[in-house]
Amino acid sequence: LVLGHEISHLILGHSSKRNRLETSFRTMEILLLSLDPTEGLLSLAFMAFLASIRNALGAVHSRENEREADELGIKLTAMACFDTRAASQVFNKMHKQNVESGGEISSGG
Image 1 (cartoon, rainbow, N blue to C red):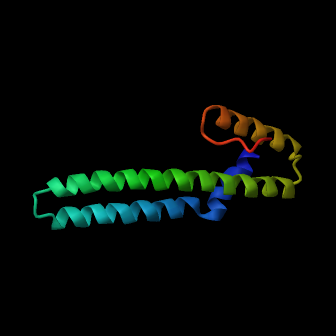
Image 2 (cartoon, one colour):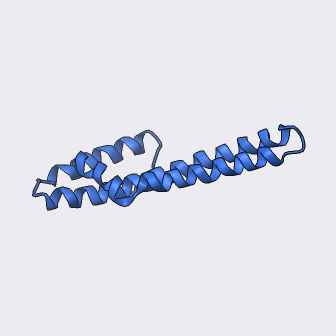
Image 3 (cartoon, rainbow, N blue to C red):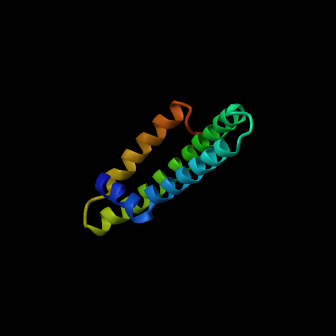
């Protein structure tokens, strides 16, 4: 199941998407630094702002990427003729722990 999950990240191109996002933000930061007439003061503030946006977007993409990889990973595991029944128990435990830690709102189940 874990191998199927990790292979799913490669199939879905998650690392490529993350690299493009990182490169875009870094390019904006460098461009701003080169154009800043305040000797970097304005750039520092703007770079801090961009870093917070980059981190927030990264977290959203990370959760979405993990969910997609989980779904495809189970399909790949089943296609490889492995028993996937235990996967539902694993995902239920992970969800429960995430809810208890405040990471996700329970759907009532």
